[in-house]
Length: 106
Picture 1 (cartoon, rainbow, N blue to C red):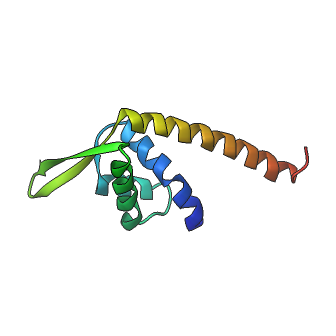
Picture 2: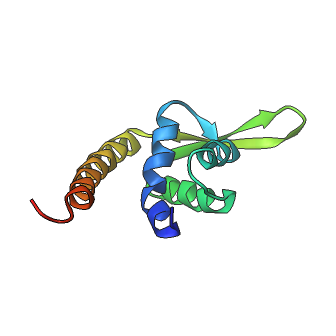
C-alpha cells in the first residue's frame, strides 16, 4: 500500500481503534502496524491533529516501571467524525471496486 493511500485512511483507522477504548500512542501504532505497514512516527502526528481538532482528548496515567503513558480517548465529536469518514470510505471503496472490476464501464 502506498504512503498516499495510508495517509488518507489513518484518521479513520485510529478513531476506529479508539472507539473500542482508551489507548496510548505506542499501543495504537503497534496494533495498526499489524494490519497495515505504518511507522510509529506517522501515528503520533495523527493523534496530535485529532486532539487539536477536538476529536480525541488525552490524559496521563502512571505506568509500572516507566514514565507515565498518554492515553487517548475518542470524544463525541470524534465518534461523529469517524462515522462520517466510514460512510465516505464505504462509498468510495464501493465505487472504486465497481470501476476496477468493470473496467470503467457500467
